[in-house]
Length: 190
Figure 1: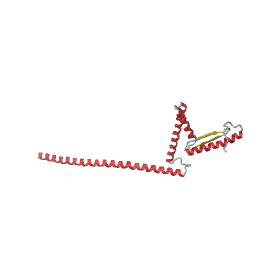
Figure 2: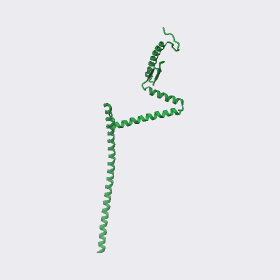
Figure 3: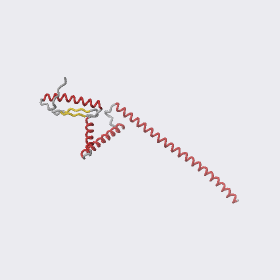
């Protein structure tokens, strides 16, 4: 035999109201968890009791991320952003970019061997691996540049050697021509 339907109206008895709230809140939280897990849904649930106590649940992406996503979707749904919400949107963008810059600066300082206090062995090993990979890349690039320079110098050396041979031939021809002229001058004077 099933339970009878109860009227959906405010429960006057404070104790009964609190008991019903507690049971239904638990059921609601359970359903929210199930929905998040079964359907891989981003879900946020916020409940305030009549006494003002906060109860909340958020799926794996977190309450702040879901509320931010909700706000953005709400603003997009309205179509045109009003100046205040547009300013907030840009402010969030600036905050995100500042955080990224701070993270990159911190990572750079760590790669330079600074700000390492409080770093775990695992993080230090990760830094060592990053430095070794960077060093490998730098060495590889250095070898490529040096090989290109050596090739260019060899080409220049080959051209200079070729020019020297040509100049040697011209010098030899000029020397022979000079000897012939001297012979002609001697023959003409004798």
